[in-house]
Image (cartoon, rainbow over all chains, first blue to last red; front, top):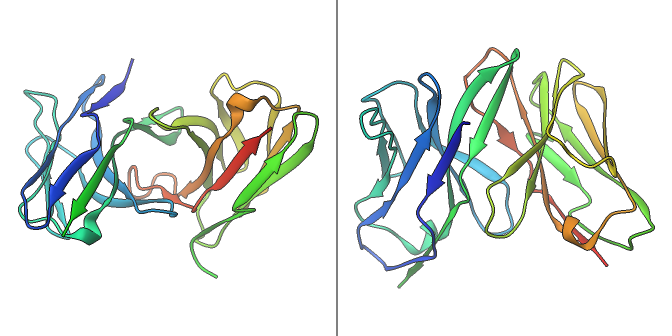
Length: 114
Length: 114
């Protein structure tokens, strides 16, 4: 079935370090792919998305490229800040049975230290 | 108010209690979702309502009973829960046939079953 696999956390970085969080997926067809972020004590927020192969989603300095050949959607940021500390979820979108459905990975916790 | 609002934010209940979680969205969406978030596990989709009709019930035990009286409100009725049901329950909404995959989440209700 459709699924998402993320690298296990926590990921601990110093401020201004480079970030990569790996995400791979298994799906029939060509799903849209998403990264959501959950800050402490809050719900999930959409961070970025890509709807077709080779698309690059970007927001707040984060980027991810939809790679069909490797079924991947890795999240990257060139210089992280303390305020980026959160849990990051990779997800794939399916439109099935007449409604939207998101399938999430387990989440990767990022901790950024000054 | 804007966005997706969940109440209560925290709930502690015994295994014989009956309680309800409430979700309200002010975004004009026509689909609503319940997800369960447990530590170190992917978000689990529990229920989906599209146009106030339940369209998905993801093998959830009958001790969880959803209700969607209108497109703005969603409830999760809880009865004779087990300690392993302790988790963060997230409500989300989306516009069907709109921006594919973009779900808007509430901040969650943290449930502890004693």
